[in-house]
Length: 305
Ligand code: PSU
Ligand code: MN
Image 1 (cartoon, rainbow, N blue to C red):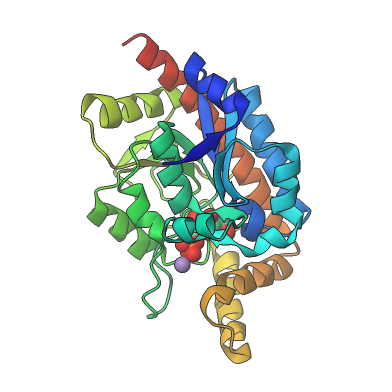
Image 2 (image 1 turned 60 degrees about the horizontal axis):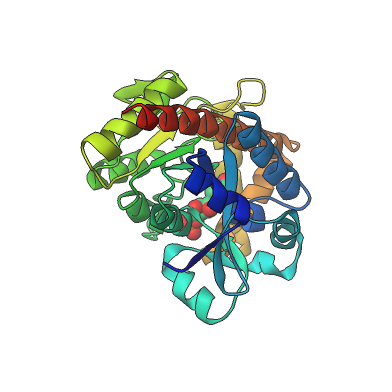
């Protein structure tokens, strides 16, 4: 794959310094400005503090990039470029049209895999949507083709979580709870969905990644699910009630297709007095920190193997 690495990321790769890949659709589409910019900075800082190098993936002027400058992050966060949401199925079109935009988990997994970077942090993955429209994110298939670890707070808040877990199981993507035996419900720490396996420390998560990727040579990613920070986590019933109300409102207003998720998210922000937004930023930074700790432990494991 033609990917342009930033100098810092290229040097980290050749010097064996651990790298944490970050997606950019959450900057370009997932969060409103200027919270998106704060979140991007917080993630990069959290990665650096833990001793790894952050590598934001995006498409800039038709070039697939890994490692962005502060100006380029700002451009994604505020400019007209916010319109482009690039999944793995849109990557070729984006390159041909010399587009600029944020890459989703699916496109970012493809880039991270090609670059040989095995640790990737995000907020929530895409999955199986609620309702009967058959909307299933390309993230799921991409996870089945990325030999690495994706650190996240489970799946996006607006999804059908039981079906998303079933789909991951069908694809052979293992889900490991980080210090928890329950699949998180994004803003809420409880989903009622039990996980069979967990990793309670970054070291144990790194050992799982080493077993999956190096000892067994499996191509599927491991999903490491991190509960949201307890001080910002919302009550699951409160989120559920707000979501049901938001879905009803979307239907009344005739909101359909790609516009549904942004509509629901902004309704959730209103209904909770901004607490979902605060939780989103905090969980992103936490995931970035955990991912960096795993990347550092994994680099040590491989170095001593
Ligand atoms: N989680 C959020 N907000 C988001 C996303 C995830 O809370 O905007 C983004 C991620 O980039 C994820 C993408 O990969 O949405 C999935 O989109 P889709 O359902 O269109 O595949
Ligand atoms: Mn979707």
